[in-house]
Image 1 (cartoon, rainbow over the protein chains, first blue to last red):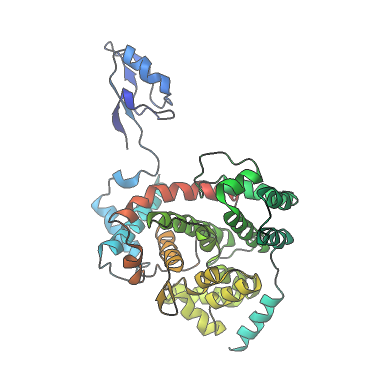
Image 2 (tube, one colour; image 1 turned 90 degrees about the vertical axis):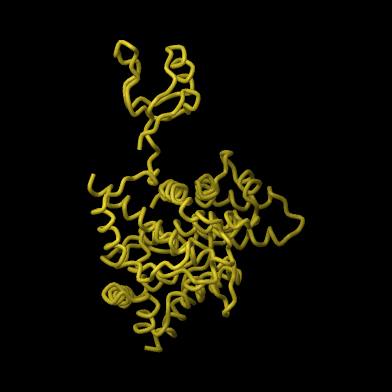
Length: 110
Length: 282
């Protein structure tokens, strides 16, 4: 998932999700460029204050899961997890399996 | 049925022991006058082992920020014990033939799962506030070694056991008892004896499905127990089992993890798993 950060938060290796444009709509930096620490200063001198970067891989907490997908995952997990989570910890274990299953489905379909 | 255990015991007695570099290192460590250099010299004499140790020491499993480029440095940063554990883990991994895979069991996927359990065990040990996390990664990596031994020696029977678990959604040990009259945990314990591993580790191998040693909660065994479940939930490799069992009730009180700690582990565990699997070049 993409997120907007301030130029001060730019870290080496972050990937630009959207191009950076000047006020005339000209592209200063295209999307998918790997940012470097020095970009932080450069962008500020161009008057840019924030950039949109790509989320980290495996940052699946932000995956949007549709109702259909949730049902599919729950159906898959029914064959593996034959117990009902009864406390908060067990619910977390179930949630881990849920996230992993979601990731698997997204990877095989893309 | 019962003669399987006898046959298996015999197979274990005839199976490989840990390499000489391990026994030599144990001797060096037993001597109070030995220095890091003495141990490093022993390890460096086996170039293959030395290279492997450095690879593993640099994996995200240990989370060292400094680059480990010599055995001396590995011992200095990880300690004698953990370096010895790396030797045990890599030696055991080398004892098995990983080539023959079949529909229900793939040794490479089994090792990936085991590495995942090693990573999770070390992670949860730290989360629990345990200061000495030595042995956690080794325990995770070899906790289910009995499965591989059964697969290698009795492939047809072991695959049948797996097939039964898949078709009937059964616990693997129940199916193993049907077919072998024993379980991979008991076979694993025999192997641990063969390799003269410490009781703490053979307890993990024998009791990880419950986390209880003679009905008493054990922290190392319980953490590996939980990690084996988490690794299955996260689809790390393939344990061969079709179901994810319920964590034992005593685990939560014993570990007293902070709420949200398990879910928060998702990203880090997944990343170090993926990186570590590459390093073990499976």
